[in-house]
Length: 608
Image 1 (cartoon, rainbow, N blue to C red):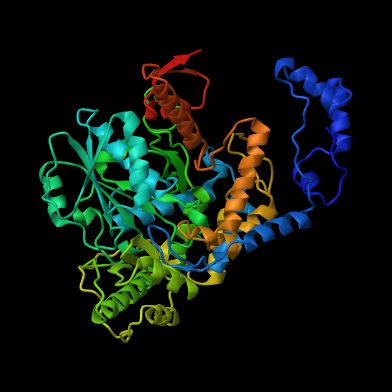
Image 2: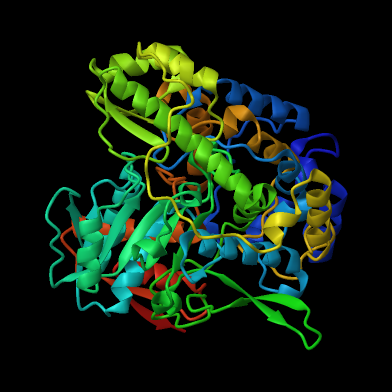
């Protein structure tokens, strides 16, 4: 295998050994070439003579050009689709000093707290942010996305009653992607999902171990069904609310509504759409569920002088605990993105967040009232940011009209459309949308929707009030990064399958609007660049691995192994061999492995 001479090649800049380095290494090992070394190391029966046929490796400039070409094939319209994803603005000081700063994006997972105090401090405040807005006592340091967080909440409820009950009630007005993930997660565990309508009479049965509601609903309803909440509380059925952080800046907290667990996404707290992710999810719970909480939790200690120090605590689901009994394979956090969302809250503070939420709600109210005054039927009686309405004409015709005007709305059915306001909406945009619908927009003095807003104080901690100027925020971020060890300073004394370094070119492309501003449910014709990028990567990986197909859907290694185990189980079932349900796992394996096997419905047998 020949390596290009040192130049501006992307390869030589980002893979360490050069020709002279390789020659020295091979001499020490006693080999004349990499080919000879490979034949010695790789068993002959699996050694392949044929090389993988990839195009020539570009220079840095050429690599940027390739990415620019892909980005240009995406069409970025103003997506007001909602469904858990919203336009937001990343404050420039946070984008520049954190997202684009290798002191933050090259840091290793904080298993060694003494070299991770900066990140741990912000993750501690992330937990504080989530607890304050949800009203629940405990939160972890983030999860992977809202849908899988809802699935984790379901299994938390399932574990609490030790499998004696098998029915989980699910609100039909949850986001569709959440319903799909719940179905995938429930089947291997023998959980029966029962979808219910909010209009139906509440009827949690004797086998019901939990209930999930979307708050606000995917249709936009800002008030959860009181009768279902009351019935669940009376029968001691744990309540999970999938909720929206920005909405909680105005609406009653999940705890005030009687929820035991709250889940959701932090995306609209300053993290770009990015075609669906990655984004940090959150999960919080009452005291009753604290020991069931998956993932990573940061705690604060104080030394004898009163100085704070941060550490990982309550690691009930970490890989080194109860390996053969684990029921969650989450052992990590979306740390960088959780940090971005925390800093967004610090930058705006509680009054700023409340102002943004009020503005979003005001736009939604103005638009809903304008629709009603002009004869449209609005389906949700209350709303925070999302309004669902009957179109009067075919939904396809209306969406074509709004798309031509530069907007994506959400298709619900042939006669129904949703629109979700975000923090970027302007009066001019509202006027343009009104023109598309041939309605007269009410003046902006229209009163807000009469909801029961929260009156309690939240985010009173000093960190959410001190850093509202760019200079103060910049200094705070520099101070915190000085408490950390990352690859911009030195090698990191721990190694892992997750220790990877993305090139600066790749990190730059993450922030380009053509990639960052694309909604995951945007029309296919607008996402050609993304789809081409994904397809080409899948083809490359198939060629390297020899497999027939590749899935890029799992958003963590643990989710990848879980998906693979589900595929193996489905394969055996398709052959009429469902009894083949034993999974052998070495005692030296990563702790997520037995957890994933349990989640996929296998019986784990640990071997030496």
